[in-house]
Length: 157
Length: 386
Ligand SMILES: [Zn+2]
Image (tube, rainbow over all chains, first blue to last red; front, top):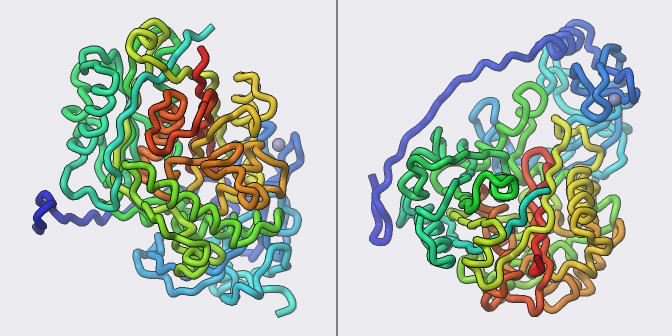
């Protein structure tokens, strides 16, 4: 316990909680495809024909069911990007993630929505919206979006 | 038809990085006491209480239970809200619903946060789905940076124009006795030279983390007229939520669908066709300097791509045509669970003519917004006219 003149007494405590989160049916199918075939799959809305990644049972915009799986490219474009310099705790491990690292919103060819992922570039002058990127896979694959795809690299690099 | 509802009083704490002189209950008590004194009422005059904060930040469940002494909730009807960054406006809008519905006449809304007691940037990563988004989360900063890059690409806005927003906020905050960051001498150069957090977002482009609380009292027409010399009448409320995942909206900041939808709905309800002309002041939940410029566009203060020009022309300065955040905004004060309610309180103070040194002359109509979670928006429009 510590206390300065204008402060009230304080108590320090630590919470260390382990969670086990269910991926659900659609994500399990997606990750099985990713692990076993190295394929990235989206789902097409039967109403507005948007192709969603991540997959989901219902389109939030037109409220129609999503039934059809469609293969997506492992290439796409940068919709937004940054180089993170702020030291930051990796939420999955509790360890500090090494900085700087490239971070982008990426829309894969064939998809209507985007995903957030790492980019193998830490010079902000070389990263820009509209650039093409390609997924770099990590072997062996385990069925995880941010493990199996190690990062995206700039196409032409 | 909903009943007419007004804000009759507000109370805020002195917001600081660390309010280690008080615990949560005492912090809430400070804000609630000021709000009750302002209206010259007692806790027995309050029919119901709505309260909100972000539980993962302090790390305790049922914060409203801890706060029973602080907000007088014992045996009163009450409900807690937690909607992320919007929690303060959600709380205000819920209080409005309660009174407008005719169920309660006088309702107290409370928002609070003691960010200094936990680890906000870590807690905020739990916004991200653990399977699809969590691993890549870089708190609020990385997230804003990628969205800002899209906005810069679309609008051509510059880092200098964003820095002007950061300067405006910290200078305005000097007129606000409750504000956390008051920086009278801050310059555009200071912002541009501050530490790079995630390109293009620098330290002084971002909001701080604050400890603080805010309380606002809502009342139906006859009680409002009786209790306040000049109540702030609520003309419209609107909320709009986004789709589930961060990448679902093509332009989460540059063309925030929820902000466009909610503001247009509220303007239509309030009969506003030209917000820049018809609003006299706005208190918006801007979070980062770049975000404020994008929000000028989303809220219809200017055309698409004109956000940078608006700040260059001084339109949103204290002396401009539509002052934005005379309080210093979120860039100066950010106790998250209270932040959006502070927007409502500050907008009400402007309408009631009680904003002290930060008062804009002749305010009749004011806008308050909340922003949070996955690009969710709340909007409230207040007016001097019933
Ligand atoms: Zn659809």
